[in-house]
Image (tube, rainbow, N blue to C red; front, side):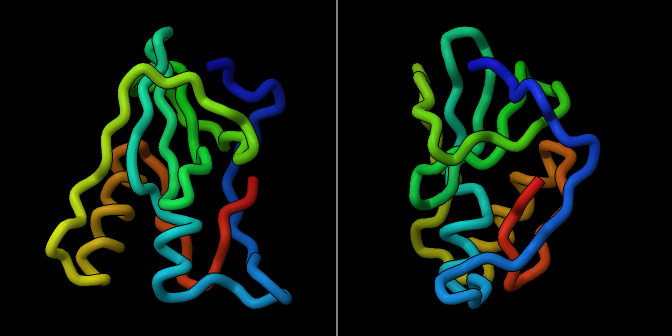
Length: 116
């Protein structure tokens, strides 16, 4: 997996959603927060959302993350899902936020989609 050639130097969040409505509640978690992690043969890692769209990628563990192309197919060799079974919605959001923090990424504000 090759990092994006034009990686942004900072992250910003803007509203997205159907008919201009920002994702909220469950859609916030499904679209904006990570659901799992893919590891590729070259050691690169990709956080993906509940819709299995890539969100963030990094060349290796501990490397600086860059936004991933959500339309790109990721040739992963390992897939890991963050725990969610038996959790409340708030606990599931906390798991996604913790995954972002582990990568050194800020928490996206509620009702916002991530754009670089």
